[in-house]
Image (cartoon, rainbow over all chains, first blue to last red; front, side, top):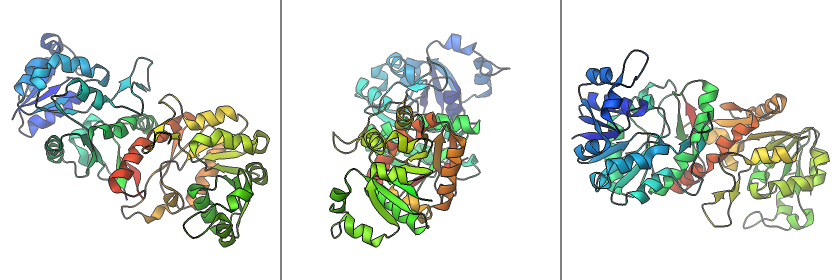
Length: 224
Length: 224
């Protein structure tokens, strides 16, 4: 069943490549596919080359991508543009579907490290749910770098915990099944969507750990 | 060498009891020792009884306690009263000393779960440092319940990570030695005091995990 992934940056492409590898057809959504095709993805390749190397992934507009996915849409663009991207996808194309939001409420306008553009009494996930009430928003995967979202078994210290928040139990179940398919063995349901405040507010600690370690390949394991 | 602990709640008493057990004389600081002596600490004992059972711990005013400690003062009162407590201790009694702040910027005025009274661009630890510039503030232990601060080896899943933040390397070293004496095997230096924003902003996730598990005995382990 086709999955739509909105956003063609590192997170979107990493998720798309792995899901396609697992046999799931993926439509990557972007604002302007022609412009995106010519955009470099690394020093030696542009998006056109990347798509040629990933035959299970196609490129379309945000709206076309969302319309093509019968069940699951993943928001993998920057948190700051989340509402714009989802409006471009179109509420009708998102209605009734599960929207997995993996983004973070980060404001890079003042440089690195970014600030949060939310406070502790809200979350980006809740803002998205409020703007798209007919969509079943689930928050997850925002606490790890893209490579660990899809290859969680690569840390020498062992498994890390992935959190799941959402108001719709069936939507959380679908996401949890996907997480297990990706190899996540420690998936922790935090409860309703408002519980996404916790994992989103973890980001400043994540950013500091990234500075301390000099690399993004780390996670946290809840121990008890 | 005598250690002062400001605050006679669960955190202060737990730290005091364990440090005294490890052979460190402790002076517990409170606003009004006579009032505190009559205050219940559980269903069957008041502070007077508790002190009788802990001969290595004495009770004094905030100022007397801080004055009695030549090197290390621990702030273990509520985060919301931190600056009041430290003003009562007196800047002269804190000058040049290491102040280990284990509190959190939690506002319980609207019930449980509490809100943070800081945002992501500051921390309580930095507010304390700004108010007491001659004191060497170190943030640590604020990410776990009191029992795990002093008995970190009691979790079935193994060791959890304790973070340390501070601008003064020697002060962080002293705190790190104390943490190791308490049994912490995974102590992670996050850098300067501003890095305490990360562990303080982790509190909403901690509070949610506490709701999910129904108990406070858990930690997080950084895995990489």
